[in-house]
Length: 363
Image (cartoon, rainbow, N blue to C red):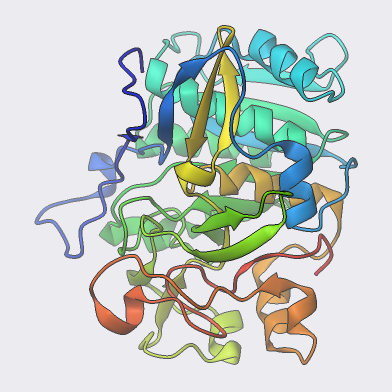
């Protein structure tokens, strides 16, 4: 990340083909963080501020309970000090190991540093705290981004009774064994899982494809001069589509999703993801503006600690109700590819932004 080009996106692609790779299995899985950087680095933050995004999505200025678990890969040695700088800039409560607001757990002693993944960790931790300042943050660092190592990190998070929500800002191509791994996304303590849907346009990815995970797609926000929303459309990079392997869960069957053919539809919900309407983060004293569906996963995980009823079953029930406009902004324009129906945003549900972006913390 030390070669940023001004006004150019730096992209970390999901590997999400529209077909099954011959011989591709879980053992081949390598998670990718769907994060994009817009512009260069600087000493002044640019992009949407915590106060702005809270007004846009009708979120409270403060709040949060329990612990948000961030599942990442590799070590980020400066995350606590970077979070301190972020909090000072936006007048947020301090969140440190010493005051028990922040905790970092390495899955193994051999976790190494990786700059790309550290950038993702920075986004996830800083913005989860920004949205739910009173919730605790647990950063779980997998040894590598392999599927097996991510599952070890997930197992640790689900073993914790204090964890309310779990954010997974990464993903990759689906594989035949994925249906046998759904049990990893079931917490005996009721934690809710979120995963980014991908940033390479149309195409399903795992773990967002699991019916036990809330898949988060992306939108583009256009703002007026006063910070209010001018329009919100589907982001062209938002991942989404129909799972190759996962059968459609009952909450989607009851909702009746067109053209899904009995398989899991992705994503479920959406959040601002366009780097051009992105979020400021700070690392090593320098600010960057970032976007991608990786921004939505930790912020939705924070929303889960602010209110109640945040789960897929309630989302689809709320969207089907006569008061659906109280829960989501229905994204009805924009597309993420040239595949016709599946690539186009539309009323009710679509394979780019799901049910829409949030308008409440209670579902």
